[in-house]
Amino acid sequence: MTTHNWLLPENVEDILPAQAWYIETLRRRLLDLFHGHGYQLIVPPLLEYLPSLLTGSGYDMDTKTFKLVDQLSGRMMGLRADITPQAARIDAHLLNRQGVVRLCYAASVVHTLPDGLMKTREPLQVGVELFGHGGIEADVEVQQMMLDVLEIAGVKQVHLDLGHVGIFRSLMKNGNVSPELEAGLFGALQGKDSAVLVELSQSLAQPIREALCLLPTLYGEVTILEEARRKLPDYPEITEALDDLANIAGQLQGRVVRLCVDLAELRGYHYHSGVVFAAYSEGWANAIAQGGRYDEVGRVFGRSRPATGFSLDLRNLCEGLPVPGLAPSILAPYIQDKVLRDTINTLRAQGETVVVDLPGHEAQQGELDCDRRLVKRDGSWHVEII
Image (cartoon, rainbow, N blue to C red; front, side, top):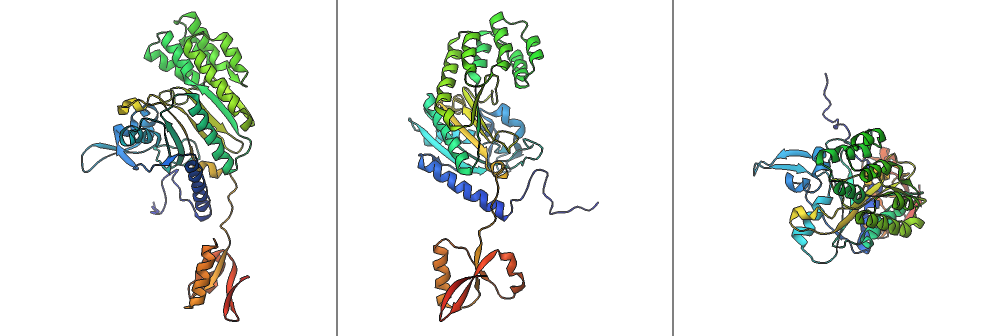
């Protein structure tokens, strides 16, 4: 059997020039957007000691994280599968500020398994994290930022889903549910399996049981929140969660084509602590961008801080958009001429791409994607269409 050394592992791909330039151009625009809103760029390391990477999000990230032994210390290390825990560590231990901290990032992460059949195992994660403010003002700011990103990228007809893990948590707390039963109920809700939900909740008090069985039906337009107020137990945490969702929906509804509430959505339940959200649009099978509140992550770093954020895979985002080809360039001859060199420098300073045709490759000029050339006339160099 012949082994081709140039083959890449499954779900690991090269990004070729046109796509790579498109992704990089969009990355720069998004970082400029974040910078304009006061988000400061961080570049965490690709690998860290394993406990730091898995802290707070370990339940969700453990199986996604590549693990290896550090040859210097003998300790287990991991390749990051998510940048959010690293941002929380930086906020807690390196910046150590008392007020609001806004951080942003754009870097690769690595997953042991792809998130879908055709998904890459090396997403380019772009996102923002806001630390230090527990009110919904922060949640709205982060979600507005996410919608700004999608608008800049050219995503049309955005569908926004809102949920709140605090509702399920309140039911578990008030029902004194054991960790084992909680895990089963969580799985049934994630799978929208009402039959299993009914069976597992039989031993619980009637208000808790009825509320759990009701959650999968509480999905739809914002008006579903009023039904939830009437039918769910009047626990303070649930009332606060419904108030927050209504407030956020009121501020965002005009920016999306459809806004839905899903009170059974527990994505990132072991990680998030409050409002969770995800953006969808035609052309992408799954969420384009998602995020939520995760106030409890900082506590494991020794400094509990309110936190919310969102992230997306820039490669996945761009795969659903039409990618323009490389911008046409200007072909320049390979001549030792000061006037020519000055002309090339001037054109490049104006934003043009000028490719010098090295000697001996005249037959391959068509591969350079040049639609114009520099031609010398009357002692000066002019740009002419090829």
